[in-house]
Length: 164
Image (cartoon, rainbow, N blue to C red; front, side, top):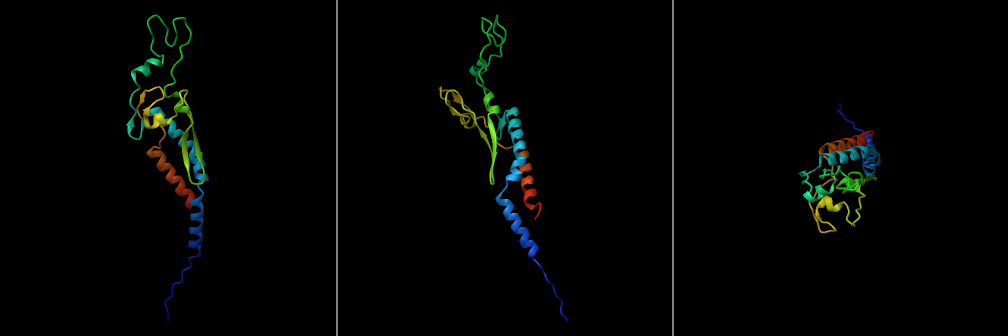
């Protein structure tokens, strides 16, 4: 009399192949994550904070160029002759000028901002000296929040093991 245990691992081997195949092409979950990532980027910008904390305040000179303050004898945002005053687009371009790109193995938020003086968004992301000599502090605006990363990991995990 024998005690026997037979194990068929064919289904396990098939599931492993499915998992490997899905892990090599993550376009579907990245596609589903592109809109939440865009919302995450906009929320980060609205909070004016990066992964290190709140952004440094705008310089007094920059705040003065914004044209929001009413000058004596003038209406806000207008010249002495009544024409609209040009407002500096302080960080306004950065807020909207980014795209979400994805492929089989990547999900990227990329800035498309190009400023008139030739600088790009990197000067605001990393800090440095702008084309006109002004020192720009780092204001990290393209980053993924912990909530988004958690959601992305869950989405990817669910996709990979969905039919395994």
